[in-house]
Length: 222
Image (cartoon, rainbow, N blue to C red; front, side, top):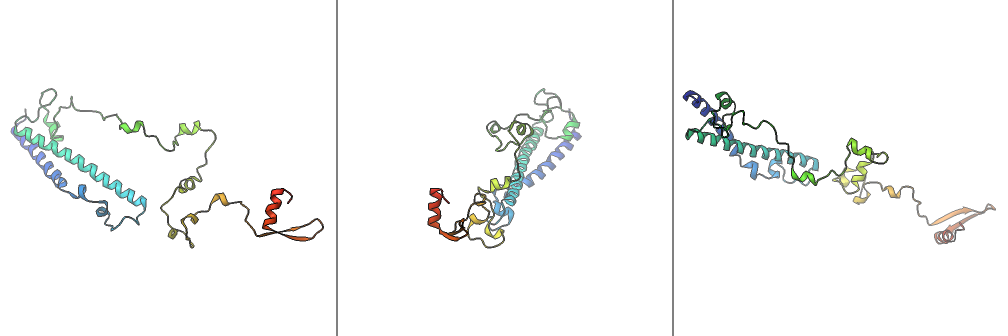
């Protein structure tokens, strides 16, 4: 059974926690503020996606902390209500008195040390059962594949589907987005010419037009 002095000490701790949590709870900007407000930018169009990803991560972290603090505030209010109803300091499971030392460390607790959760939940989100990595590059998976994969051109393989780069990011003048990268399919191809100069067996030079060249290729005598 807690003494009057112990009750007074614990009530003071609870009130201090309540004031601190309510100060954060009153920050409506966390839930109502937009991404533009947090970055102080008029527009996010010219921002790199990596920068926006960082801002989004910080935004999500702030909201997660806000939800956690809201839950803590509810526990503190319930503890103060139990103290008012003279049911404070009693374990919800066994009905035994919770030691003062435990209440001093965690004033809003409702369970004694024997019935407190002493392990983290091991269950995983349900969506992980149907989500798979796009490219499993684990040690075990690499040994299942036939041959060895060269990751040197991994960026080029992904960039063919689009990037955030614009012509202003490259040197020189580029009028078309399709001209930003060299097309590997065009490397090693013969250049189309108007005429072809050949030398006969007798040493005579002769010029063949494009039409004659195509006809010779079709008849396989060039």
